[in-house]
Length: 320
Image 1 (cartoon, rainbow, N blue to C red):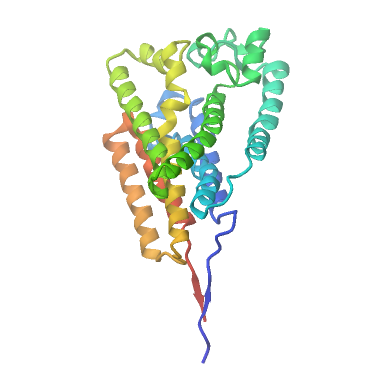
Image 2: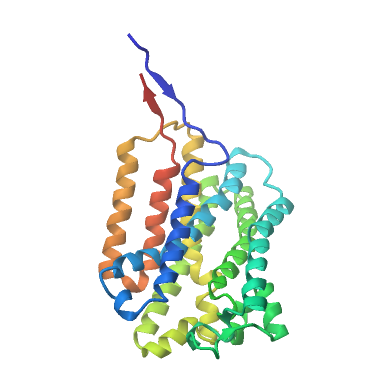
């Protein structure tokens, strides 16, 4: 007779499955942007649903950032430990983005000459694709502050707008942690204090998404493109951290859930519970594709958070 061996789950710093989710997000972003270079017939053909799903790869990245970066702060606060070093946090965030970005920007923007000179709404012609020469525009792109300046919106590497939003989140996150500590010292329960800011971020981001969707629905296609991606103040706002705040917030709420479950001594989550999380995520994503395209990013954020929970919550294996 063989004994049953229960393998206890690991709550280590690196959670199993995270790299897989990052890979899915990266592949999705690549496929979507490749699709943008194809013909209208291809984009609206049988693969249209796939391209729409891949467009949510960035949503998954934002949710992952909210989860991974908030989790160490949440864990420290719940366990009564000192907060992570802000200096080390800033150094790690800097290394995470800038070295690779600077290399790619210098090669494509200053040597090869294959970046947007004016912005993504100006098309792919030679008047808009080339080598940047304006020193102020180059400096703004290098510092990733070009998305705060209407004239420079979507210039250089257009996908870098997401890095500006991400870096803004990096600055905001420690303030969120300090705010939670302040609320706890004022008598708030730890869990309530930790979810307060993420919930506010969800409300703000969702509100902006609904407003932008309603406003764009009453515009011509060209005006709507400029509203969201042109050299306009509205594009600065809609590509900002505030407009994406709900996506980071969903990840942060998932981080609180995971830490609280861990602290309550839960060592495994049943497979059927994880399967239910994935099933619900798939269902709401499909419903959004069919009925809620204008707000699909925020719905996809909820779905991404559910899948994230299914991946990182602990499960034990039994072998005989």
